[in-house]
Image (cartoon, rainbow, N blue to C red):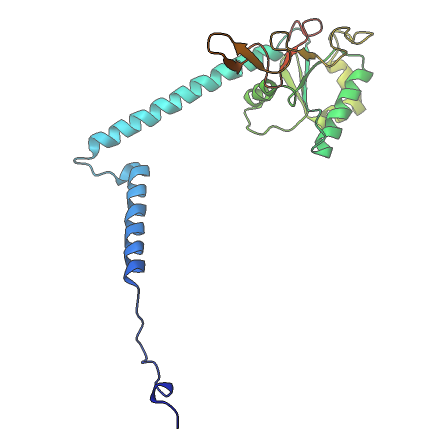
Length: 234
């Protein structure tokens, strides 16, 4: 009644494997072993590969030394930018993307203005160079905002500033700092930035020799320069 092929059952224990799958697994395992051999210094043999291991070690050592030197230079430059006789420097952001960070920056700025202290406000959202300075000073890739410095010394973030202000110690910390000007700057209106005069704020300049545009080196990535009237020392 039923066809012979319907009553046929698969033979137990028979499992076929594709030749392409086995070859791909073998090749991938070989590639993995090769990658590990390149990345691992100990994977090189002591005989023929000894010289290659020494060269690789020297290249890595020179790269680490170059990175340390550049980081030390950046740290020294950043420290010099915030150092000064009772100089108050505040790194903050004016962007509202992260509300708690924006509110913390706003509170610290309001506290310092209430003390009538002249502050060198450095908005990291307006100039990426300020963020690079803060990273070098804090030795962290993602430092929290805001951060307050007085005379080249770190005071702290928003929580530290609030605690010092509530205890009355913040006035003593900033004592001797320049006073806040009675009126905003007539040149920038207190924003501490102005459009670049060389490129008009476009961050591009026309090159007559090549007939094209090139990046303006006189301003930052936003086509802005620091106001020379109120940031002469920054």
